[in-house]
Image (cartoon, rainbow, N blue to C red; front, side, top):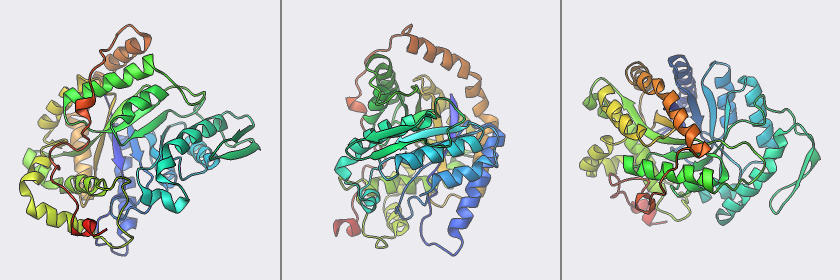
Length: 403
């Protein structure tokens, strides 16, 4: 099993003069530390206009800075929004970062899940999947080093030679965001790595891993001529400390992250309230104070706890043959010091055991891809819950109800 770290660059209110500057530089320090500790991937999102939830509109700039402070860790777009970016600009930026990082880029692609992000770019929420699929067909040939042109419904590109080209050939590994669990099956069918959120049980993990690998081996339907990337990675809430109690005390930011997901997921198109009208931290604080039992249950989930507790949880998920666990602990108001201490303790006490068995997992994957191991077609319908029961009671507040 491999391990990554994950960044939304989240900043709850109140904001001070240098809040964003401090967060960006702390995140780069954390990423540099993770590289030295042997973590495998660093994932950075692209979001626009999502107050408090994410201040990361330019991941290529952040990862470009990281490329000069690290040596081995993979620099992963998790994801670039193909719906709000020109395919040519995407190809140019991915290739440039790949050159600067000596071939360490992972190319994650997505649609954006929010009308709030899409509409300022002239994109209709209902068209986002169609636009994403066309963008994939448009962007992949741009890595070839040959003149390309494209004519479609959403993109028209006259023949040009797109430069530079990436160091990795034919292109960096491809991934797709799976904000809704059924998209995991789609990722397999399209031959791309799947970036999903943590499942609520090991049974759910096994069901979706089977669905993913059965799709990529039996129902492959690529959108363009690209190299497949058989990988399924899960983002998990994370905080490691000497004791379970200390880890939970340090992990309040994770419940803010969960609260924000549920809060913003109440609308069918995940539309956010009008700009500047909601203090999400205040909304969270009011909910937290009114629901201490739910908060406690939430903090018992994810990978939050002592090294022994986290190790036991990972062993359960390891049996499902998940390829990578992506650790999220830059959330809410979690402190830089606690994040660094958590990364160090996990790398020392937990990660080596699972890294040591990576060869066995790769052998399993090789046999699955070659058809030597046949995976059962497991039922996924009962495993559609992204949030679990811990935050089931999070609903629209007075502010949302008024919208």
